[in-house]
Image (cartoon, rainbow, N blue to C red; front, side):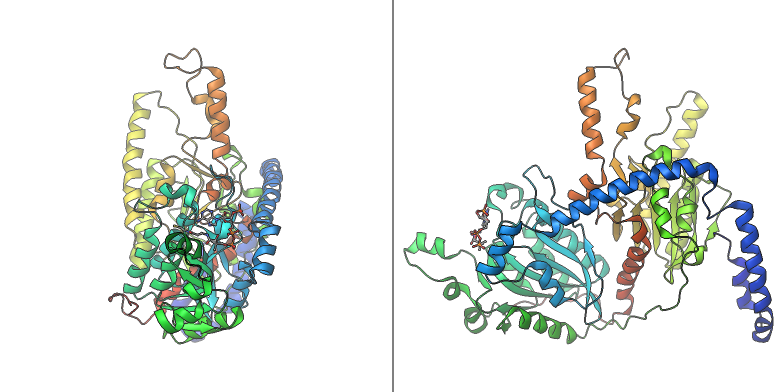
Length: 571
Ligand code: COA
């Protein structure tokens, strides 16, 4: 149930004795109010008039979740059974997911973009060839970047570079210690031109390592396989590195190249094994006899970084009054199946409470404050077309959050297009809207608070920028499986010029093809494969994911280190 919390908040101003006396009565009163409010407005209940849309959305969500689970299952097998056998039995290494079990605390972690790399123009690259995410090590939230050597020897594809850069960006924005598990043959050579020369290509990963070190964000690495060429720089530029005997090797060019250049055969171990790098070159700082020992060592390193954030754990909070499974019926299968966004909020906020701001003004945008698992947040949620008034309200509210240092959650479900003006007054209204949108964009861009964006429906055109889309750098951006991401909605394609229109230039089959292309490119899975987001999450897990992100973001509040110095350089 959604209801204004002012009544309860005013308790704080009463003397203690009066509070004790009044509290039971007020609690009874608030329960009566809750019931009354519920009966009057059906604020959290799904009104019967929405039932058929709810059922339709539910069927759509179930089908998408089935597809999502199948994709996750495929991705969890990395490069496939044969590659895993070769990796574990012939090469005697642990599969990347088993490595994470040894590295991370025994707690749930947040995996980022697991579907990245599927159906690329150059084929499927499961999980983009490397797992990234945020998990706890010795109680500290850390970013991890772990190559999966079962995918073409852990070589880096263009999408793999993008995934690593995004993980580093998250580490920098949220000041998170980073761990690299390196098992990589360097660049995937057939795609070298898409990997090597440009600013956001491979070299940027090394550049970021230096910058992060200068920002006093510690980085540690484990050499847990072959680290060739680019793969060799990552551990060497890390502040501390562990290398595993008989498993980890590090060189710019491997034995085949040495043979070609000098005619001499040298074993990988002699050329760049654990003994050599620990005793002779100094490229690694710790020698580990086994994988298990290496992860223990890295955990010890982390526990002595003087980086204990002393997180204050929030233990007390109440659950929403409505079941999160109902979010599946509230996730719109397309824009026309959108239900009031407060029904969604009432399934995400603590106690389903929401302190609404400007409830009766610009109602196509819902703004207000609430808590998610005890964390105070500002909410900005689409509830119809982003009108002039809605944007003015949005700008005001975003500035309030920034002023009060309250993180903002954006719930994005933007309209596929705005109606074309049919009169001068409508044209004027649209230009006012444009101006107000520009002002809200500026407010969102400049708000100096953490932002998390959840695409719960449409992510269309410029409205998505106003609602803190990817180009507005939210700390995290997740999609629900039903989300649709495109400049325009293929399902509203009838507005595109048709045969007979004066500006029509194409033919019908071209239009049909374009519509099919748009349909395919709009899906959440298509977006996530390309890393336009941090992953698809299930609606019923949203509250958990938001709470995890808020805790991760909050960690930096407790850091005692000063923000900037020079980087640590290996001598
Ligand atoms: N570019 C493209 N494909 C590569 C590759 C590269 N740099 N390195 C390896 N591969 C491919 C192999 O062709 C093989 O493909 P396949 O499964 O279709 O046959 C797959 O990755 C696994 O390689 P393989 O050598 O069978 O596995 P491995 O575990 O024994 O060794 C490496 C993995 C990475 C150590 C080894 O392949 C190697 O040293 N590669 C050369 C790395 C290199 O020179 N990089 C320079 C980058 S600038």
